[in-house]
Length: 199
Length: 137
Image 1 (cartoon, rainbow over the protein chains, first blue to last red):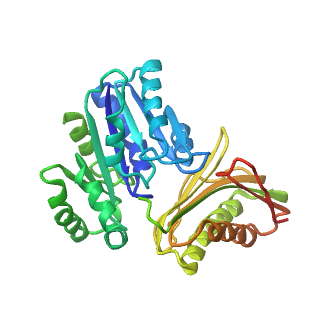
Image 2 (tube, rainbow over the protein chains, first blue to last red):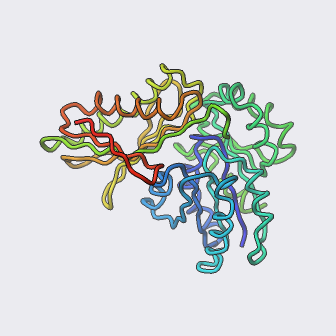
């Protein structure tokens, strides 16, 4: 069982990306997929949306899996393994989560050994200028753990913005793939799926 | 990313009208509410909108709306398709700069202003175990 963590700042397009790519990942890799969603409040909005679109979701409401919900997260992973035994668990943490802390939490997982754990970081191309001003350090932490960096909402910005983002992010992500995507017009969603499945 | 000035508010807003409202009117009110919450947050001192999102729905329909930009542009997935006499909106406001009590006040005020003609607005805080309902009408 592998794990993919889809991390990124609040409102960066994590849920939309999952809605638009999960079916393709399943088709492309022939994988059975379970999804864990961590949302704020005791009624999760993202989980409701995903379930409406036919995805099987395990919600972790009220809190953050990188801090207060750590033990619940590990228990949920174990429960999913025991009951569903999927090939892949996709984790959507809340947008306030630090993906590095989630990886640290997974070091305490005592269930059957996992295969790979990959971190996909989504970075909002529209809000990039304000995010690097207001959230510089947390953003750098996210970039450093990315196995794939997606520049989301690419349909709403020009090429110059995307180039600027890539230049900014490259020192943090090294040679990891940086892919501009748009869930609205589908740009590069297939490329993302190919990259994820092929890694 | 939790910083010292991060605050969030999750609530269920239950709105009742004296008669069934047309789907388009309901959609306009919902979008106006979402945009209004964002603009009022920014006016009150939010330095960064994280995510203001809502969901309305049952087994048949689901309308999910979202504001992330500082121009308060509302993006919705799904629309109201049938007339409704009441609606339950689950709304999350996640932002940096204001306190939770400010967010509670903004959601209450926007509910009053945006759902014109409603006979009852009840707001339930979805984070607390002991519920205290705010009745606005």
